[in-house]
Image 1 (tube, chains in turn orange, yellow):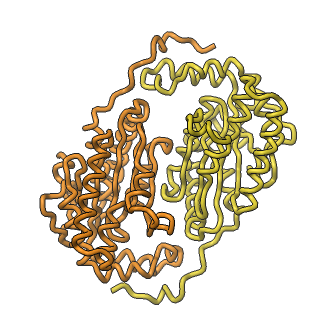
Image 2: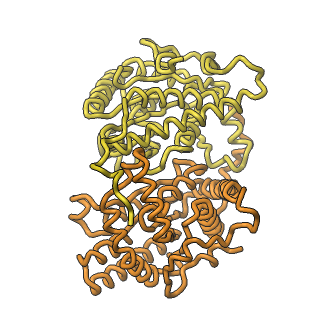
Image 3: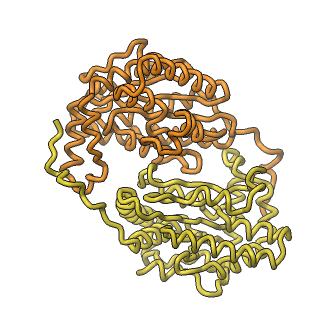
Length: 273
Length: 273
């Protein structure tokens, strides 16, 4: 099964709550060992990703940018963790883009993002990104439809430039349902050790769930390009979500046609004294 | 057993090859399952580290800087991997300091390092560091004894400032023997998939083994402070090395007296709608 095709966002994506619970990769076995099997399979795939990453790092000719977006609690952190579980930390960098600082706000909204795009040989994971700037301000009414469209075009231009200069881009929307978010937010509230993760404004955002889903649908529709594809990943199940993302990253890296750099002259005849 | 005391560099450290193979934490059992047991124990300790890291990240009041130094193949990358295996990638950053770029060389040698020290709530891992600048140029004769001493003093000042402004510093020298390095470099040469890791200048550096060991001894001796302690970790065994480092990081974080931030008002009475 080709995950890149299976989960590629369609031309006019509709984010329906019921689709967040889909588990198309789940084997048709008893529920019992499903999660365990999905964890094991994910680990196996990430092991293969780690092998490709070594080639990427060794060759230093290409770069990979993975953008993770999704509503609060959709699993952006958890997905990032899975990638780091086996990939060498010297070759992958995760950057979170929270509400911009004063210095960041003094620049255009692509400035802080641009500073963290990957260099040759590297993988960069964006935990949120420039897409926040066509979501939050739009829903809050800080930018109008015209400005939103202008930003959409700017983002398309920016990503095309990155692609043309050697960056493979993949964009993943972690799709959870409103019910699942309710459960996860409530868990944070019920566990004092998770209180720090809870931001009361999460509830304000949640209250505007539909507006955010529509803003996502638009942003995905107009920035979904073959050189910067969007994938919509059902994310109500954490283990299945990780399995899908592992598949997507692996297939993307396979498509990069990576290879080991040309061997340095006669290195294998050297003897260490 | 207190690893912080056990592996703390002494006043006048002597780096003897025979000490690189010591395994004081290894249980006195048959060799058979030793590595497996050490891996399992390391994973358990890193799990505890991950718990402290969550508190560090949640509180955002302190920061931890771990500096890894050691000869080529001593395991700086492998040690970094172990830390990342369970700690949330959003809360830990690894930075490698290879030979400086032109732009970096246009600044003082602390400039590029300073840019990557951890912010509040973060752990930073330095894979090599400003210590390279009292090693390589000294052995190559690019700086004389007087300049080396001046840099030692600058490094002491820099680290004291970091400590005084809230950074917990720990410095780890991964101590391998010359024989073990020979084995590891030869492995890189014998495996075409590891050729990219091999840099012919590694052999030049190896040829000056003793000079580097002396430069390390000096640097460690004069920068070994209670607020920026050096630990000398026998590193001929990879699993035992990881176990020691896991112990050191865990004990250091325990010493930071971390706690969860004060609960936000009445959060536990909130209901998510």
